[in-house]
Length: 95
Image (cartoon, rainbow, N blue to C red; front, side, top):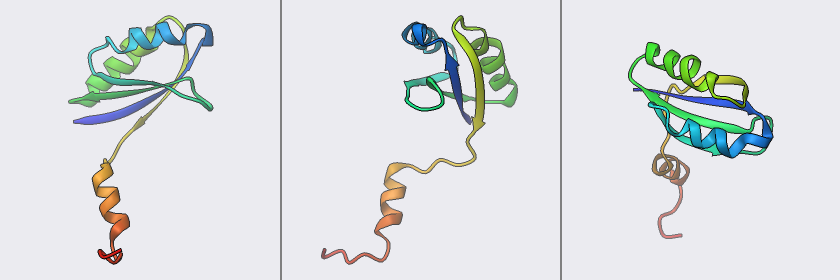
């Protein structure tokens, strides 16, 4: 499974409508409204690179209000439990 994050520049007057449209796209699992350089971050999970191209270029990029994007593909996922366990290494379990 391929996980990617699509960082979007969106017409700020239409962020809620764009987000609602994006969550209906096959392959899009989550959409976040964020602060900073981008307006929305879209999490995409697909089976093949070709599917990612279809979702990003064929669907997300064509949503009215999307003005630009940058796509980042994840190599590895670190779950919250794994991170917590890693930070606990070497700590005295007695407190």
